[in-house]
Length: 105
Image: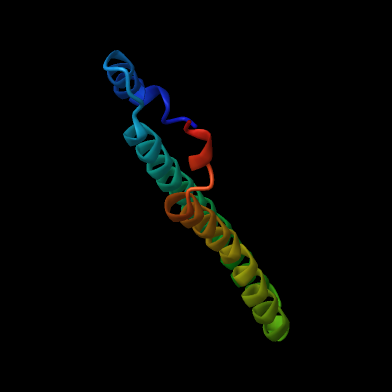
Protein backbone atom coordinates (compact mmCIF):
# COMPACT_ATOMS: atom_id res chain seq x y z
CA UNK A 1 0.00 0.00 0.00
CA UNK A 2 2.70 2.49 0.90
CA UNK A 3 4.85 1.56 -2.05
CA UNK A 4 2.25 2.49 -4.67
CA UNK A 5 3.25 6.18 -5.00
CA UNK A 6 6.88 5.19 -5.38
CA UNK A 7 6.06 3.21 -8.50
CA UNK A 8 3.60 5.65 -10.05
CA UNK A 9 6.01 6.36 -12.92
CA UNK A 10 5.85 2.73 -14.04
CA UNK A 11 2.06 2.90 -14.10
CA UNK A 12 2.14 6.18 -16.01
CA UNK A 13 4.55 4.77 -18.57
CA UNK A 14 2.39 1.69 -19.01
CA UNK A 15 -0.73 3.83 -19.42
CA UNK A 16 0.95 5.89 -22.17
CA UNK A 17 1.55 2.82 -24.29
CA UNK A 18 -1.94 1.50 -23.60
CA UNK A 19 -0.99 -1.43 -21.37
CA UNK A 20 -1.05 -2.22 -17.72
CA UNK A 21 1.99 -2.82 -15.61
CA UNK A 22 2.08 -5.88 -13.40
CA UNK A 23 5.66 -5.03 -12.47
CA UNK A 24 4.59 -2.28 -10.10
CA UNK A 25 2.07 -4.60 -8.44
CA UNK A 26 4.64 -7.31 -7.78
CA UNK A 27 7.26 -4.78 -6.75
CA UNK A 28 4.81 -3.18 -4.34
CA UNK A 29 3.88 -6.54 -2.85
CA UNK A 30 7.53 -7.49 -2.39
CA UNK A 31 8.38 -4.14 -0.82
CA UNK A 32 5.40 -4.19 1.54
CA UNK A 33 6.18 -7.78 2.58
CA UNK A 34 9.79 -6.81 3.32
CA UNK A 35 8.75 -3.74 5.31
CA UNK A 36 6.20 -5.77 7.29
CA UNK A 37 8.76 -8.44 8.13
CA UNK A 38 11.32 -5.82 9.16
CA UNK A 39 8.81 -4.06 11.39
CA UNK A 40 7.78 -7.36 12.97
CA UNK A 41 11.40 -8.31 13.61
CA UNK A 42 12.10 -4.96 15.26
CA UNK A 43 8.98 -5.18 17.41
CA UNK A 44 9.68 -8.75 18.44
CA UNK A 45 13.29 -7.88 19.27
CA UNK A 46 12.25 -5.08 21.59
CA UNK A 47 9.52 -7.18 23.20
CA UNK A 48 11.83 -10.12 23.83
CA UNK A 49 14.54 -7.89 25.27
CA UNK A 50 12.03 -6.33 27.67
CA UNK A 51 10.77 -9.77 28.71
CA UNK A 52 14.27 -11.09 29.38
CA UNK A 53 15.19 -7.92 31.26
CA UNK A 54 12.14 -8.25 33.50
CA UNK A 55 12.83 -11.95 34.11
CA UNK A 56 16.46 -11.31 35.06
CA UNK A 57 15.41 -8.52 37.41
CA UNK A 58 12.81 -10.82 38.98
CA UNK A 59 15.34 -13.60 39.48
CA UNK A 60 17.81 -11.11 40.97
CA UNK A 61 15.20 -9.99 43.52
CA UNK A 62 13.96 -13.46 44.36
CA UNK A 63 16.33 -16.29 43.38
CA UNK A 64 14.02 -18.89 44.89
CA UNK A 65 11.37 -18.20 42.25
CA UNK A 66 13.74 -18.66 39.33
CA UNK A 67 12.09 -21.90 38.19
CA UNK A 68 8.64 -20.34 37.85
CA UNK A 69 10.06 -17.19 36.28
CA UNK A 70 12.07 -19.21 33.75
CA UNK A 71 9.12 -21.33 32.66
CA UNK A 72 6.89 -18.27 32.34
CA UNK A 73 9.65 -16.49 30.41
CA UNK A 74 10.01 -19.33 27.92
CA UNK A 75 6.26 -19.48 27.28
CA UNK A 76 6.17 -15.70 26.88
CA UNK A 77 9.11 -15.70 24.47
CA UNK A 78 7.42 -18.38 22.37
CA UNK A 79 4.24 -16.30 22.17
CA UNK A 80 6.20 -13.17 21.27
CA UNK A 81 8.12 -15.04 18.57
CA UNK A 82 4.86 -16.39 17.12
CA UNK A 83 3.93 -12.84 16.11
CA UNK A 84 6.93 -12.68 13.78
CA UNK A 85 6.06 -16.11 12.40
CA UNK A 86 2.51 -14.95 11.64
CA UNK A 87 3.87 -11.94 9.74
CA UNK A 88 6.24 -14.22 7.84
CA UNK A 89 3.36 -16.51 6.83
CA UNK A 90 1.28 -13.54 5.64
CA UNK A 91 4.26 -12.15 3.70
CA UNK A 92 4.84 -15.52 2.03
CA UNK A 93 1.16 -15.75 1.11
CA UNK A 94 1.31 -12.29 -0.45
CA UNK A 95 4.50 -13.12 -2.33
CA UNK A 96 3.70 -16.58 -3.64
CA UNK A 97 -0.07 -17.16 -3.52
CA UNK A 98 -0.99 -13.72 -4.93
CA UNK A 99 -4.52 -13.49 -3.47
CA UNK A 100 -5.09 -10.05 -5.02
CA UNK A 101 -4.08 -10.96 -8.58
CA UNK A 102 -7.75 -11.15 -9.65
CA UNK A 103 -8.18 -7.44 -8.87
CA UNK A 104 -5.50 -6.32 -11.36
CA UNK A 105 -7.93 -6.35 -14.25
